[in-house]
Image (cartoon, rainbow, N blue to C red):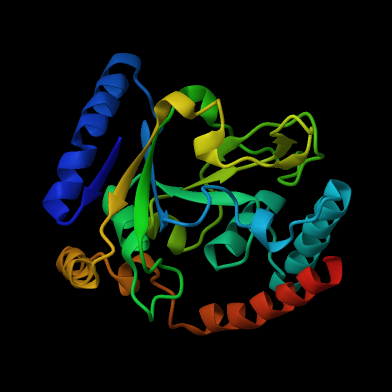
Amino acid sequence: MEREIKTIHDYLMAILPYQQRAFAQIHRFGFDRPALLFRGKKAKKKLRAKIADVVASNDISRQISFERERLSFLRRRLGISCSDWDIVALAQHHGIATRFLDWTSNSLTALWFALGREEDSYAETGASEVWLLETTESDFDIPEEERSPIPEKKGRRTIIFTPQLIDCRIPAQDSYLMRQVYEHVDLDKKLEIRPVDDNPTFAERIYRIKITDNNNVRSHLLNELENYRYDTSHILPDSNDSKSKSWDTIRKDCDKLVEYFK
């Protein structure tokens, strides 16, 4: 389904059939995880983890080495005691490209990220869309500390999980993360991260809703969202504190590592 929305009412009506089906699934199976996840993004961006575009190396072993080296760097810089999964999740939520892809169980949070303003560095601007994913129980997993969030190129699968670390952005965004893996995606047997909408695992249960690129309409939609407290101060509650500002330096240092591995 590809339906372009121009009002909040359009949006809510577009997702209603999927929500009704999700609620029926919860009632029938006692599903204790979100049966419906959302992601807002720019229309031209692929629906996959950002790391695939930041370091597009044909040498997958080198790519994995880069990710692991940067994970060690982040652990040293942050100086916190938590799992590798949570280190990468924290980096993802502060604008560093990882093999994790953000999803939310809150449809209006996804719409806010899809719209965005110039001053909202983590939101999207321009033509955009919201993707809906109907989940199954097998999509989810609980990351174990002995397993790396950066697996070798074979033998792992895409999984969805919610971070365990204490960070204000996680509950504010009703956050779930999808850990993606490298796989063969064409006849040439090239290994790469496959876009979610091109993954046979999700093909029959993923849907797109287009959002108008009319700036006046988009501005009106954002104003409507702000009336319901969907704005920077609530979705990114730490955006102005000292810890958030220190992430600017960490992101720049991570960019230097990218240049080294290219």
